[in-house]
Image (cartoon, rainbow, N blue to C red; front, top):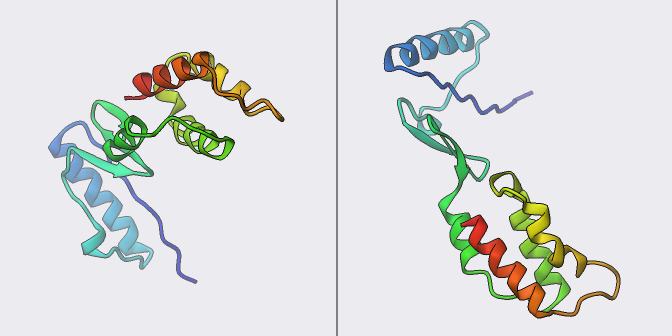
Length: 132
């Protein structure tokens, strides 16, 4: 059986980072596990992981996702609205009061309720602005 794992090693200092890497690599070696060097990144200050950017200053949205949100056209049907809310919902933790901002849009998801209004346009633009 072959298992693949993502191993992220975060350290506050370069010296600690080298020490932590040594511990991780020794444990892998002890258990006869190997890493593919081409898949490794050592000593970087930030890394993309699961559509997020991880760095010493915290977790942020990936820039490509920010562009996708900012360029998203105004939805003209339920499927497009679901797509937009799905993308923004994945990153809701980065937006203060996400639920209240998106409420006019989520109301349109109710059965036979999709009717785009000025209130929906305002919520759509406000949510795009808040995300980016």
